[in-house]
Image 1 (cartoon, rainbow, N blue to C red):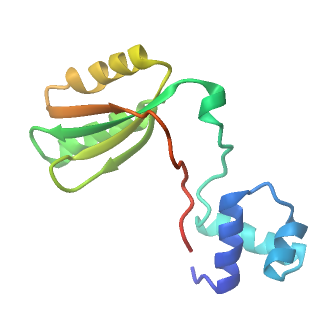
Image 2: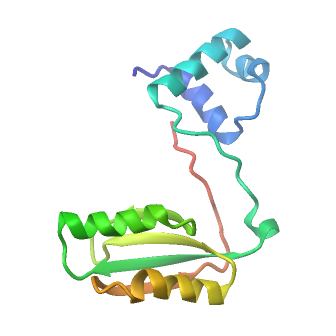
Image 3: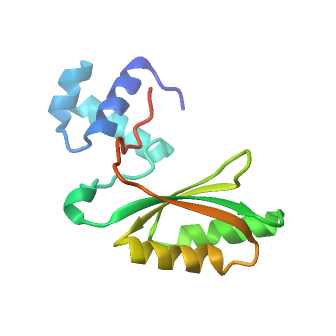
Length: 151
């Protein structure tokens, strides 16, 4: 899908606040509300907009985040598929990245408490015979949280 400058500006605005009206968005990018709607419909149809979600304030909801670095012992397509499937199934895994270097995965967990974090990490990594090593780091202060892609 070709993306022009208006698309970039519109997508940036939508990433920041998808609840803005078509009229407001159109004024920002110089289009009519119906033209904005057509573009947004096209973005969804083409898969450019993967989904729409509401972002909760973690401090108001309670709980904590933890970053976990994971190294697996034996690498194979099957072993990586098993880890990926487990991460996708867990409601507490907020983000998971396969990474290069000393570690194989970076996992961000959303936990109710430090005790809950400990139990999650034990169940997900300590009990996995293919996890060679993991390091859990509780997040003290989330400095920046976001998924906005620079366009």
